[in-house]
Length: 390
Image (cartoon, rainbow, N blue to C red; front, side):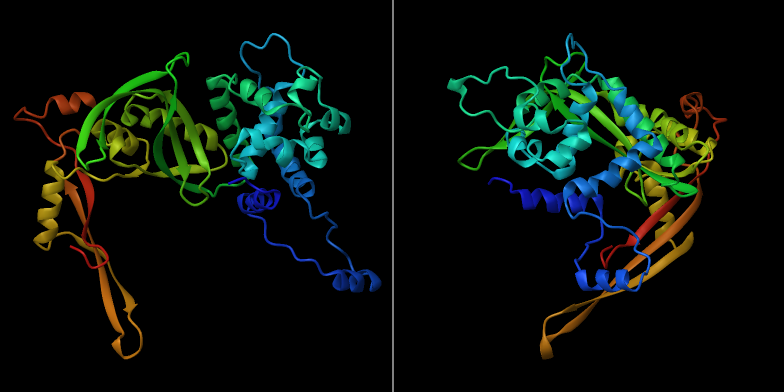
């Protein structure tokens, strides 16, 4: 299904989180007649909305970072590389799914193209007439064609792109976007490419497929690409740090680098005081390092770990501290047949567990089988019940 201009405009409004405006000409007229102050007059189009957004980027220094962007292997440039970056940014901001939809939905919009740096003549006639032959039909509107944007945006050097991301986060921190204390959520996601991408990693994974007869087969598939690792602000959902590794690298290898980058990005503006991790980041020596840095961490323990069994056993025996009990009621049915279900959640805290041998320096973990070994204590939170389920 083809996207319409109204759909991408709605997407822009949702992604920028603007409050919905309504037109009230009579109220404006009354305020002007009474000589009351008017906050501002704005055109209700995309160019006017994004004008303030671009001004914000300019004011905090992000636009200067983007202007330093350059593509690799570019011998001649008819368009400054920053304009490719801004065009692709607008494509993402508007939620335009197809490159081929750019000419009618974005490139033909003169106010938006002026924000990016094109004047009216390139928008109507194009930067050049290369390829505008009669056999190709009527030239699509806009300064460039979609293929030009697609071929140039992928030339942005990966490390330069990472640097721009982290530089933008530093600019946001200085602008006061984050609070005084920040909780970070670590996450990693695969960015698959072809095997021709220079420097990418590769990993072989088992994939389960179901045939037409309903039988499940397991095959091995080799995947190429990168692993994008993020530390995201829990309150704002804005990244605190971005790192890129090869797709086969384990997340636990990147925790220290990611946290260090986040602290550098927030330096002087906010403090990273807590990190929430998933099981992919579970590593005893890394958790010990976080503790020594004064950072509280929260990470799920694996079921087969000794410290997990220890914590659950103590909680079942009534030991520990009751951190909280919550009862959530849910109404089911209608009228006389309606009934109320009570869903209880119960959380118990266990302190001073000494059954996680790997919690310490790497040298500490290697001494686990010695008689004089003393484990470092660690705390646990045991969820006894969650929404009525044990």
